Length: 95
Image (cartoon, rainbow, N blue to C red):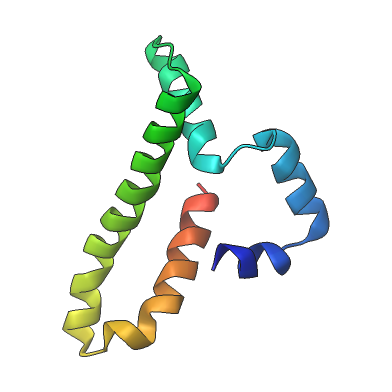
């Protein structure tokens, strides 16, 4: 999904994003910023691990919030999964 979104993203927006991330994954950048704010120095490996934890936590959290709505509407999760992934990704990047 990420590859598809990147391939269809505005080139200038992608270039700005790449410059800000300095070649790192967004969740690793989030881990760096969080540890800096907390005054904790993490190794690169620890930053990677925390970034993966953010990634999984965000995905699981979004799924936990989204799942009851799918069940309440009588929809099937399989049919709506691509929409949920792209919508939640869009929502989180706009914050």
